[in-house]
Length: 241
Length: 273
Image 1 (cartoon, chains in turn blue, purple):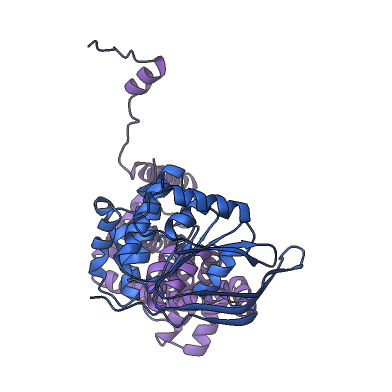
Image 2 (cartoon, each protein chain N blue to C red):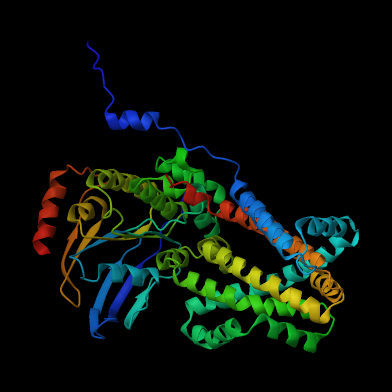
């Protein structure tokens, strides 16, 4: 029996400003921004390009620090899928996953099971350079879930893939999500992806970003991408963008 | 059901029948160069007819004498050990400093003058200074080799560090790679091309300076033997020792460096066509 998930992410009054390297002009991306992701909840953040979605995720990942406000997420084990797979090309697929497990203090031998879950068993010994874009992103997904994360961060994970591959990976991600309870934050510009995967969808707009709309997804998992409810929700999200 | 015959196009037929380029032994071009060099040298020796330009047979005789002498391997081994220790010291320091320079602006500004100064100081100066400072102690050649090869290595590693994908560093941060893991699994493989380029440059500088150190301040090693041959006006022996020294360099390049380079870049081959 797995332990109940306790990881909560709380952003309170967060401010973040970047300085344009060329012009020196300050760009305020977030100002007095607040959001809470409850334990076991997967929240999707949707918004147009440049609304601060990735900044928000990088703040939660600890890759950038806020200029103002408080960010409380404890010290969870993180699993992350970036827009690009970010694999170490000189290690085999298995070694990439095993290294993440080892660094998380977990037996690296479980890497094969993680790869089997994403259907890449036959490529475990291959270098990532021989894989297609979709397969490489599968490895990134396998790595994120192989570390048995308390908090999963997904930064437009399928935006660089063709739609057919992206659809398959969304369903794969849903299967992995259902295996164990964990907390998650998904950043995407795809409203249907958000509706399919998330428990709650936040729509960001403006600069600095504010929450323009919020939707709870009242559908049990597993969900179907053909569900009319999700299409309706998708339309409402689009209208709020 | 009828089978459709696929007639080969002119291009595909040409591709199918084009013979693969014939490949000779790998070392044939290098061997050809050496044979031509030896021939040209022999021609020059015959035309000049001077004791200062010995012919190829005289050099070969000297080579055989040196190699058949039991002390040859000892002398060569001493020199190789000194270079290896000095280069290892330079390598460790250069990796730490080069990565620090690439990652930290203060470190870059702090070490940059030292690297630029080190690059401009001739090996002869390091050799003389180390002889003066350390005498005939092992520290002398090791320090001279390290001081002369470290700046070039540092520069290569610094430039390599600047080209490492920052996205991978973010990934390593999120997955909490330890410092050792980052060094072994991320930095060193990513820096491999720079490390090999730096190693070639650093070793070539190290070889040059070790000969000077052994000429000026040591009583053993290849440089010492070269000095003896020079004192005896034995040009054939000078050339023979120089050739043996070059042979060691070739063994190091073809036998070790290129092998290691192939091993660390296997993943690149996986995508080459």
